[in-house]
Amino acid sequence: MVPAMTEQGSSIFSGSGLACVRGGRVVFAGLDFTLASGGALVLLGPNGSGKSSLLRVLSGLLRPAHGQLAWNGEPVADDPEAHAARTHYLGHHDAVKPVLSVAENLRFWARLHDSHAGRADRAVETALERFGLSHLSSIPGKMLSAGQKRRTNLARLLAAPSPLWLLDEPTTALDRASIAALEAVLAEHRAGGGMVVLSTHADIAMPGAVEMHLDRYSVAEDLP
Amino acid sequence: MTRFLEVVRRDLRLALRQGSDSVMVVTFFVLTVVLFPFGIGPEANVLERVSAGVLMVTALLASMLSLDRLFQADYEDGSLELLVLTPAPLGMVVAAKMLAHWLTTGLPLMIAAPVLAVLLHMHADGFVILLAAMALGTPILSLIGGIGAALVLGARRGGVLLSLLILPLYVPVLIFGVGAIDAAVQGMSAKPHLLILAGILTGALVLAPWASAAALRQALE
Image 1 (cartoon, chains in turn red, purple):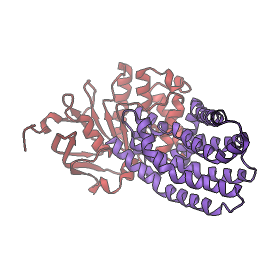
Image 2 (cartoon, helix red, strand yellow):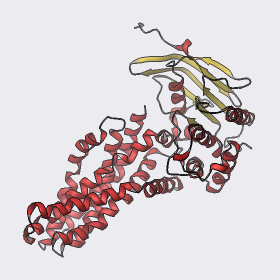
Image 3 (tube, rainbow over the protein chains, first blue to last red):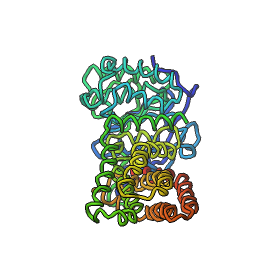
Image 4 (tube, rainbow over the protein chains, first blue to last red):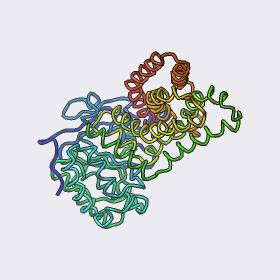
């Protein structure tokens, strides 16, 4: 059900010596990771430990204060557009326009990500079905509940294929059935060679995922 | 290119469904211009003398009204992060949004201008040049205004800050726009003024999307 990857074969996404500074404070430093096709990384840690910042660094929204990211050994910073093409980022906001219908919202993001319109439209149908949104497809965004908005945003992951998914607390506002649907989608994505990095406070079943405790990378405030 | 059109289409669709922005801009333009005959009296020769200036200044203010919405709505609901992360150059996405802004504000202003010119007793020789000056001038307003809109993103009272930033940059458009119309009315050639406007437009077309893309990246950091 998950659309085929655009980049075939196995890939490696890695970061070395990553550091992030927010508002003059070092959020984390000396962070290394390696993620191969089919792998998953779960970011854990208390509020403010830098889970969201790390995801923004990985997506390219935030430049790391130190260190670099590499995809198959090539620095990500050299070609930000190629990185954007292989990445789906899901942040705190759901990016659902109140005056567009659920299907219109999704179709826009799908076409923007995958410029082949016909393929994008078909993928949107599948994505709506997977997250139980088919009956809502013509409802305007302003009528949706918080959980339905979140599902619309999650459906974006399937509406255009991308190997790397960066999910910032994807289970917020989701009910049990939707979390189960999300777990199934994540498992399929990884089985198809995709990678997942997600931060969460809730329990989400991710067999074989590597856990990363971000508070271990924090720097004592009084260091020079 | 399909991505460019996709963004334009989405912004137009949003503007049409929300409706209020374009209507508000044109209504503001019409109402403000109509105030002038009340303020400075109905003498035809006085109105004719100020008509070009009044129309250009008011169009410029009207176009600024909707500028703070250019990126603000997308910034607030998280769409902007996703737009920055699309596999297309950000400058292109920004240019598409500016084009949509011009189509929903600049173009209606341009259409309303000749009607209001009649109201202000503008000399008939000025009409064509008024249209030409508006056609060259209003896109510049959307382009330069876009840089300001990106810069004030996330600031408190961004709308006021935006006008302080942008109004001085609009002065050349005003000078050469009004200069072109005055020249035509006085029987001289408007060509040099229009050529300079076209030059400013070309420069803005190249530089503005790039500059506002840089400002947007900064705002999202």
